[in-house]
Length: 346
Image (tube, rainbow, N blue to C red; front, side):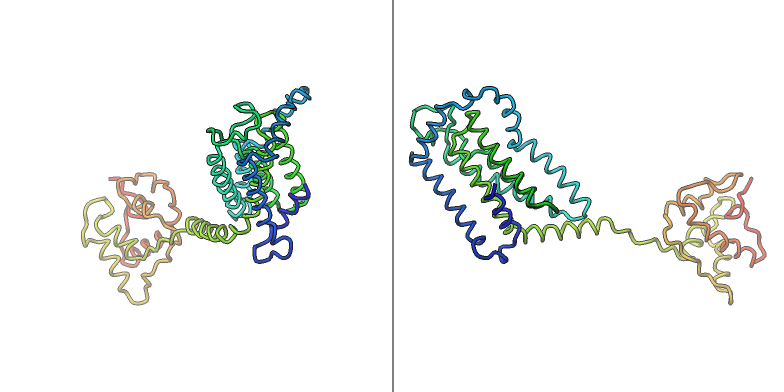
């Protein structure tokens, strides 16, 4: 657990901020991983220790623990643990409006799958239940158990959550280390992995944690782009600018109050005369948000009836144009029938 805490202390710093022994951790852990890898391939005393533990059969020494440990080993399975972690980190990223926690975790999963998967496929080691020759390292036989995926997964997932913890990092690092140790030993107890598999999983997971600070610049660039994209998508569209000529002449010039075509008719003359009369302003206060659909429906003669204008969405935006059109009619001494003030009954 102390080693896990030291790894997280190193991991939470940027590479440029590392000093002293913390800067030596990555090469030391990488060297340990290489040593375990070579020891497994060459049939060293580590492999002989694997056989002694497997022949001792821990699951038969303490059979009463089998049910409980078979449940606890789920803490190292990638499916349920990664799903729960992704859900929590996704909610946290949404809450703080920063995708960094989710991006860091996804980066850790990618590094875990690539690094551990490559070694698994290259060694092809079989587990204790499928071993062929006593004392053999059982490599290059089509297996995929070195290093232990459960163990490496528990180190990376719980360690990354501790790395991203906003508070109580020491307690989180201790719990992550405890979970990784327990999961690794449970796999040996159940007979699904050799002890060297668990050892390799611990070291492989530690390497992924130590690589996280080096991925922070890339994560930050991606986070900035995501925030910019989210900002551009959530920005309000440009408000509709409806000038007087477009709002009144453009809509009403071609029809009279009874709905008949009236190109250049009374409404056109009213609008042009009102706009050209000295002292009379043809400027209409522009509504900040007027839907073109609301404009078309509000002035369409076929949707008016004896009860007055229909109630359509965003109709309130047209109230500013009603006094203007009525004022034009009053100024010219004509009564506007049906267009705005009331509808035609014929």
